[in-house]
Length: 303
Image (cartoon, rainbow, N blue to C red; front, top):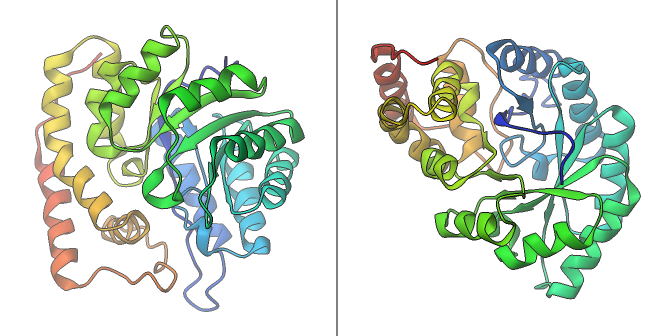
């Protein structure tokens, strides 16, 4: 099992792009990471879906990885996302992340041809064997084209020494209960489905991987504190306030909505990279209203 003991809010930064040349804006990325760490998040996970990793070339990906890891500067763990069609590409990026100082890598298998269990196992085993940092297996069938069952996920952790954690983003709460059951509560698993934040914690999730921390870090962290301190009534109230925003940023596309939200917060991070487009007027107005509603909510006491 994991020696990192990741627990809490794992924040996903977007990857800002320079409005002039369109490349990775390293100054803004470092500043965003600083904002997240200063807000109190428990880990930072650059280059996930929110970070538009699928739209970066190799040089850009490496630049973003180095910038984010350097900005974290060891203050909290850094978990770098790896999503590659080929095992060779995944191994190369995992090795680069380790050399750059990542504490762990989060590996999402991508598929053009449907992969069977034998192929998935081989992919993860080769990545895990190639690095000394811990590996988090990431299940996100909506984006990856591969759906790993709880039995497969637990099997990977049990059979491959360096695979120590699981991120479950299928949106199926029963899978999280099953992960806890199969592992006897010993497997650290992390919720990647924003609308399930509270139910996932109740199901035993060790943490919540979320881009919402870019927009409403105080409320996200307050929800975690309330859960961990057993203040479930407060947690339910906080979750109820957050849920419309959490649902909106997912359905609207995380890079698009989070970048729009950051601009509304006075922290422009550039436009999403085409084919993604910025929010149009109506959707931007809806996001503005959701953020205002959260900002206007009275504070709730949490320990």
